[in-house]
Image 1 (cartoon, rainbow, N blue to C red):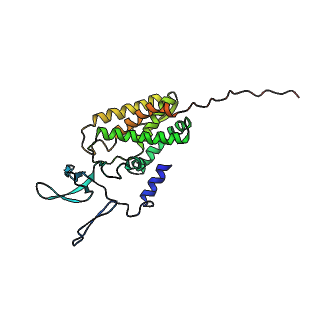
Image 2: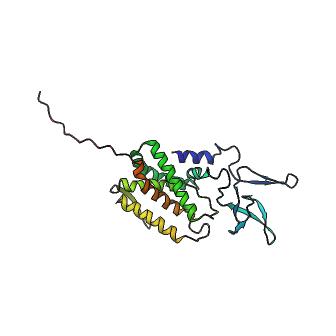
Length: 260
């Protein structure tokens, strides 16, 4: 629910002090250039043609016109990760609550809704929140470690949710998950053990992520596969530290007739 609320608040501009969209306003007279505070700035950038801009440590912002060494000008298309920015560390957390669109949001919430409740039941509510956030940080950490020069922003809750999936597969490996399987234009429902379904999902993320190494921005579909891998591995390793002993279900007794 938090992801849904944050998404709609940001999309409507309800929690921002200015325009939602990042923009650069230029004037033909002095003052020449005003960068809106919502613009993303940094010392690593990518141009509109996909090439990397060498700034020499000087900060540039999205949409800014820069002069090239060989002559001419180009527009900064996107900013890579820049931890020298004082607010950059905060984005490690806020990025977990931002999504690229409504389908991205709904897809993540579906997985969290199906698997998250049981993992939360295994620990206290605040332990679960901490587990979720740390899983998201671990996911982002691995993605940055694998692709530190990426100019594509990493957003979404899927890394943190992958940590929930990693915890689930250890806590409830034999749980039966009803799964929708599409065959061309038709679909059917099958039941799979959690360890099979989630194990196959993890293997797919690791395999596709490994084969996409070296792709230019956008060729791998914009999916942060190693964030999923990092979150899932964190869930596997950390779930026993967070999960408490599950409550034993009391034995069931049949009611017996009491003679009058």
